[in-house]
Picture 1 (cartoon, rainbow, N blue to C red):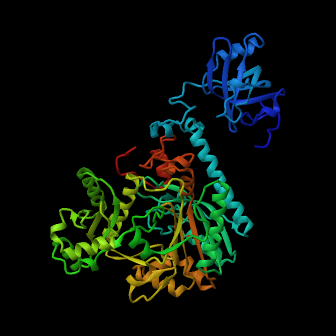
Picture 2: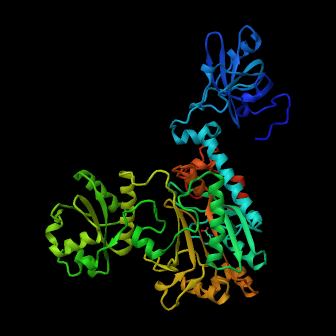
Picture 3: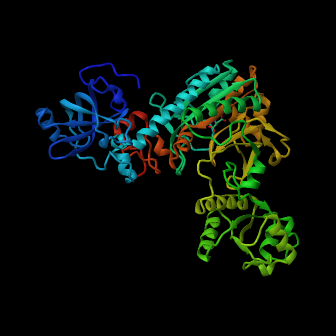
Length: 592
Ligand code: ASP
């Protein structure tokens, strides 16, 4: 860090004092990280943003400072002045950046006291998350969280630097707006001046960034807050941050090129060791689902899925025959040579059931090529051998097979693959892989709604024939890093009649389209350039780089999984007077 402007509180950063400063007078300021009273000498590790430095208080040479130090407790705030001195050889702490020196304190000023913290701040041990969120200020002082917030800044700075250098313009878009369909529920904000009407918080700046392309800005980015009212899972938050990007007069390769440069820069600046430099592999959606059972494949380990349908054609085994006759699939994977007890096979079966599969067929390949498996007796030798061959099975290998509707079998096996990697530690340490997934289906039939829905969003450019929506593909692309979807985008529709066709197929009538998206259709009618873009979940990118499971650990002030903020107590009921002003009445019991 740049040296602080000297004032009465400090003239140096604690964490940056080295042996080169020995003999110099310095003044540092910060928090009491730890205090050790050795009967005579008192040692205090002082913490500021830059790190730690050891202060020493001598009872004889500095009796006032020593007396003051006796009253110091963890998290008190102090300013201390003294001389930088070299530690004796035996006292050098190689684990501390400033471990070669200490400050011989002559003057200390207590600036604030601290109540006893509800959990230790000087260590990163596990603490109940609600307690951490409730006392987020203290939690953020802890080294792990502090580091994550700093890392987040470095990631965003690298993104900005790269995009600024590539002629992108940083343009803000509204927070109070109308619904942008990204597939989630909107958060609504009631309007006082137009009672009965509501703003929607943006699920993304999607439509605005497209309008900016139509307005001629060519290259846009924004670190944008997005709001989606979804049931939360581990990697979701009701508000999250995207790096949002849009470009004009481009096709897929142009965008992918820029983005690979951008991410390579982010990884380089944060010291994240990606195993392969760009260009990164591109898998089609179909390949990804077939081989990995996921549209965000983790390609750091094997265990590829194989289709076994042909091998089992004509089987009399009822489970397989029924599924195949009903248009389903039989797929499997080779879990490798492992001793897996019955209880663990049951747990794996339970795992695929959680993802909708009816069951899991397991088989151990024996030395003579036969199977040890409850299913063995239902297959002919030829079928069994062919399945073993397809799965490259050798003696000792455990083969795992699922028969179900295609999507169910793919997803269940994809999840099983991840579970096996976790259980058997199959991910090589230090390996990190990015992969693009392209050629997504454009539409998906929703059984619940009885209509087509857009797989990406309705502004994504389609390819194929509207007469056969199931076969249509989109010009969308996603990028997965270590099996986490970190970004996604598409080339957009730039012709109004195509946009209208997509709306029609989604069951949005012309009148409704005009009412909801008239501004977009209108802009499309005045000459829209070919354009496309992408958005990255910054929280996820930072979490992967930081090696954190939860995006809450890389956000300064996140909410719990139930959307609650233990720090501020949001969401909270409001006064009747506020409701009246808004023309609203609450008709349900207040739940929080
Ligand atoms: N708006 C999209 C999203 O939030 C990203 C994009 O298409 O650029 O997922």
